[in-house]
Length: 304
Image (tube, rainbow, N blue to C red; front, side):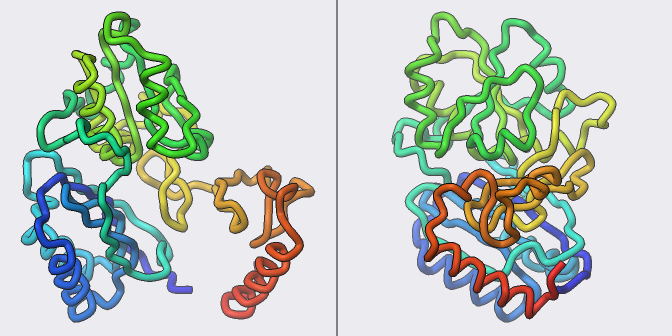
């Protein structure tokens, strides 16, 4: 396992990309020839770019400059976020660039961030906004993420996937009743789509946290924070806390659910195989496959 300090970049930008195959090939070629330590995933869609990548610091600086030159991921002032954090180990296995129809799948054409999005709220002003009793605070992430941490007083729609969000809004919210709605997500991109959808459906005062939870945890001191818990991230760090420091969470390799330290002491937990979320549904065939995989990893990295 490489224990060098990796620089991690989470980014998105809503920017038209006309030729996805050519852009994908160009990014791959540059990474292969100039950024040997790169890992992580970038998503390319006609509406823009999204992803989290990591590399050794000098390599990351090269890759970030290239992506900024091509797609404006750092220098654009509109519909763009680019945030750095760090990992004490390689947080992804390899580098991938994947084409998609949408950066964040919602399947609602009226949700078009190129045309309209809600009002951005800087991390420094977020506490004041969500302290307003007239503001309805909504977490737009999936339920397995919200279990790791959430803003105090926030509504958790308990979604399995983001495409459930429109149905939840239709069943639970009313533009005439809910005059002020504030939303948040990990890095900000889901809220771009969610706020665009809500504006298209009659909601007038729609706010979202600029830079997402990650920017808030980076900016707001723990003793001033309204965040409870940690923030789930989509890499091998699993979660980060205030100051974007790595947290003590792990992932069940059987079902991908985040696990606290106390969950590892439960009788259902078997490292690399299952946990209390999935043990009851695990077939003998899958259990054997997971155990064989765990033996393979233990042989490579050592069994802790």
